[in-house]
Length: 175
Image (tube, rainbow, N blue to C red; front, top):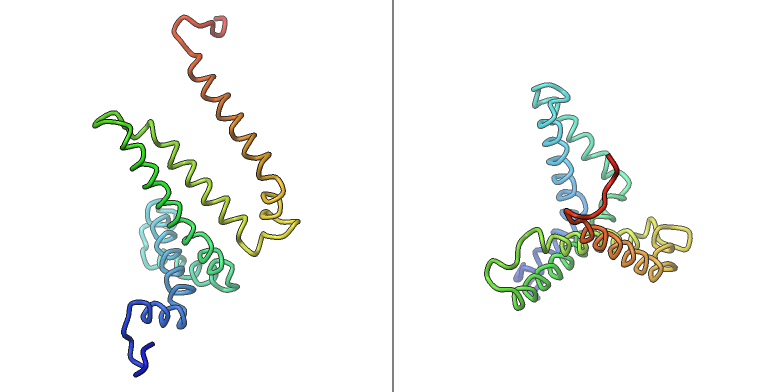
């Protein structure tokens, strides 16, 4: 806050919101409530009673915030998600330099989104304090990261090679 105690910047507002728990409790609750309510409403598992759906969604939302696991995980994953989106956008812009109009199709670059998305999830899980340490998820990835990368590259090469080898004249299963 400024010298006079008044809020003067967006940073001040965000810091105040952080201090009163908006990012740790209010926003995670709203996100969980909305997703649970949408799932219950779409599946009609509880019938058409929106009051019951609201109560169940609110209960699950509040219970999920009880021990700070969700708040801590959201504090880990969403900043990394923002970085992942930034990387994805930069990669698409870079590809745009090399491909002309119409050459860059969604299906041909979807692998970039999947790679960035999986990377963000693994990065978040390995950085989350609840799973870190030598015996947890994070410790496993720290110790084995190069083996995992080599394995992923080999699996990718095998999949790409197998897909490119399928031609109309190739040998297939005997009928």
